[in-house]
Image (tube, rainbow, N blue to C red; front, side, top):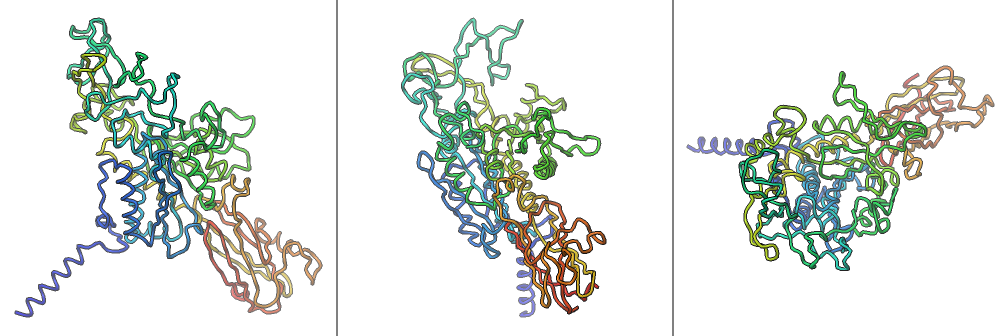
Length: 613
């Protein structure tokens, strides 16, 4: 009996163990940390809710993340940045970094979901996913889920159209009547949605659709029925000027408020006039390790990228990108031609965008704007490779059943009914308006349909974006010593050639950061256990000739002469060769090399001269 009880306990323990999540999980069909911290990814979160998620993640994963406020918004909300890296492997600033922010425009809250999902993805998978584990050990990710926190909170928590609020809340007199923000779009019928108002009018241009869900324009020869006149957005005339909703909440567009190429036409006021933009750029400029920047916007399914300035005398910059569809429909080459000093940046951007097009599938590439945008500022003033992702878009991939590239009314209706259960419309209904009398309100899609994805699509969109950022994190520079050789060129005189390899896409410093002198050079320190290292250009005591000419015609001509210390910049997908000229009578002498890169890591190598002779 005891034997059977013991066997039962062993089997039960084995079942529990097998059911639990295994660390460094290599099986694709098993969990990878998702159940360690469960989040519902089929809803939009208020400011208080997503801030609580950030701090709960910090509490759960204190070894991997820290949350800090980088300043307050105009209305006093904290702007929180989460720093994610394996703290056991070094400080965040000692590793190359990716910055991700979401929702600089108040109504583009899908960016919050994608940013928050990325944080959750990295933290929950660290112990289970080798890719994430290795990436966070050597890299840093800075995430600002909500940029325009005041506008974001209003959009999620209160009735709004899909297009408003866009700006941070700075009072503006849009209708020039001396009163600020007095005629906003308002929820007249109290249904929690903002729609459009119509009045019955025998001469009106609209009627109800056959399904009674929309107002549609009356075509010639259309059937008879009640006709309607469009009044405008839902709201009241609060200032007695006989106009509705013409002075809504708003202010200065934060994505025109950055310094690079700032214009008063687009940005109004002055650069960084808004506390939100000022907080972000001030914080970013202190982090010289930021090599890649992602901004999440809505809407359009675009990968927008900041290219270097166009070379003089070339064609206009905004030509369509060049793709060779016969070879690879995701093959991408930006059409902008750049000067030689920016050629590597152009190459890096082409490779990164090509990978993004493959990962995101339905997205299209487009050169980004300047005009005071964050994208341009982070590239031109910081030297970071910068990408603006226009999330979501028309439901063409889901609704375009005839694959003609457009969505007809019937296709949209079918998508709404079958994919979303039909519950997407503000159904037209009669309302008693205190100023206008009997009116109708409705006929428009609900808020989270057009600019932001319906809840069922939130996680799909966020997961794809996380995979793209994860790919870029993996491609941050990683330097190491490669092959080496030892050659005896004269009595007691040796040439040692050593490779420094970076097999990642990103360099340790962009072309732009080199021109800005905003980078720390990579460095190799060298010493010899017996004898001396002849510095490049110094006369050799034995021959009286410059040491850096020895063997140039005999071996690799592309080698860089190096002495006890050499500084350099490492490009992406590159192999550099450094040549050391060593004077020693001891064939067992050891050349000791130490590689240090602020953004590419460290490596060491010891070479015994007799080993490779």
